[in-house]
Amino acid sequence: MTDGRHARDRAGHDGETLIRDESQLKPAMAHTPQHDKLLIVDFGSQVTQLIARRVREEGVYSEIVPFQKAEEAFRAMKPKAVILSGGPASVHEQGAPLAPPAIYEAGVPVLGICYGEQAMAQQLGGKVEGGHHREFGRAEVTVTDDTPLFEGVWEKGQSYPVWMSHGDRVTVPPAGFRTVATSPNAPIAAIADDARKFYATQFHLEVMHTPHGAALIRNFVRKIAGFTGDWTMRAFKDEAIEKIRKQVGNGKVICGLSGGVDSSVAAVLIHEAIGDQLTCVFVDHGLLRLGEAEKVVALFRGAYNIPLIHVEAEEMFLTELEGVDDPETKRKIIGRLFIDVFDAEAKKLGGADFLAQGTLYPDVIESVSFTGGPSVTIKSHHNVGGLPDRMKMKLVEPLRELFKDEVRALGRELGLPDVFVGRHPFPGPGLAIRCPGVITREKLDILRYADDIYIEEIRRHGLYDDIWQAFAVILPVKTVGVMGDGRTYDFVVGLRAVTSTDGMTADFYPFDMKFLGHVATRIINEVKGVNRVVYDVTSKPPGTIEWE
Image (tube, rainbow, N blue to C red):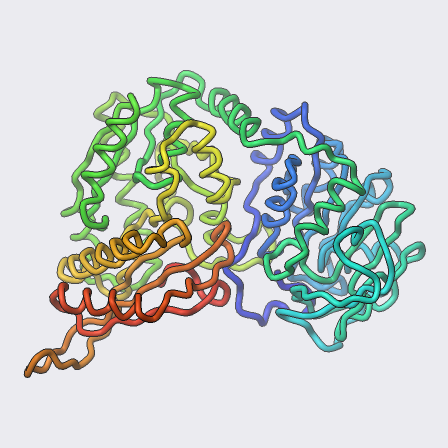
């Protein structure tokens, strides 16, 4: 999300970066000939995938490709329109990423966002300068002229909130462009060439912090580019099934089932594609919530006729994690042990060719940096950054480019019950990442009971469906307390609850203080080893949703 020469000095947002290699570039294109397509050129922004998300919300199929592959993709894809993403570079740097000239020469509408505006201006004869005041965070733009990009959303002469993230800025628009919006630190905050249908904004349209951004993208996609919106979750399902069949062939697939939304949807989707070639493996690693294993196994076996192997591996996992406090090391240990278990179960089945996972896009972008580019790695995901190189099976990840709410929509399309589809996210590494510092059985037990009380009260008060994710964390600190006439020296439990749409940005849930007081009292009274409860009011960014 950061653009301009100074962006590298900023703390990274828990945002998005596309991970794609050449082998991943074309399959989706090959399977979607019936759709009008929009190409998104990724310059390395942390939020590039949010652009695709906003486009998808309009029922328009889009592909994201790194700028290095953009010319090849543009010629193969023949898109109806192009969007240029933000990025951390400066156009003044040697080898700065730019869009292929063919995009500007093809007669298709083009929208540049942040660095995309700077690249467009630089390539088409405008002027971009650094050394001015930077803009990071919330800002305000004033509309100075009418344009189809603003039609029905913004009015001339009015000011509107936006999200900026730039060091450089456009100071002279290219020939044929006019300035249509300004801000105090970006005098050319938006430009338009209506004749060529070229538009660009210095602010980020794709993020939630630009309240009208989605509507402006809708104007570009629907009114300017003329897309009809024929890409639906049903279409995604059908195309995903086709891709799975093509990838797997006659091979055997093992699916790592956690019981969460992601792995459940992945399992049902893959089963619909290849039937009894799929076997699900549920690993009880000792890091699950209270009664979780029993619930998952009972629900899944009861609802679907998919072979399910329940592996009890608590001792294996907790022994290996003993004494480990570094979060990245924890993730990599858990990832390695998962693969050990899957390998062993595959051998028992006579071999398996593929391992299926419910990896989502946020897992990917928080784990691996942009291919050949400068975006930062936030943290590894056990499904992504934690996979050992020696893994013998190939990966099947049909949900890799979806967000959580899109996965839920796909689950409903597949007929999954709300007991699966409506569940709060639960991380694959389980309570390991809700237990900062060294993991012990005592701390895990404390955490299970505290978390169970918290979720029970959230449900009892009818708040569960209003909250994106809620959980308890046991902190690596003890404090002095007083209980009765005695002194205590016990653990602190942190409570977290957030609202979100896709998990990429989030705000804390504004509980009534009476509710928090009630929950804290219950936890302290009922969970031995806790004498203090706190509530986390950090948004994402700057924090992550999880505490690790």
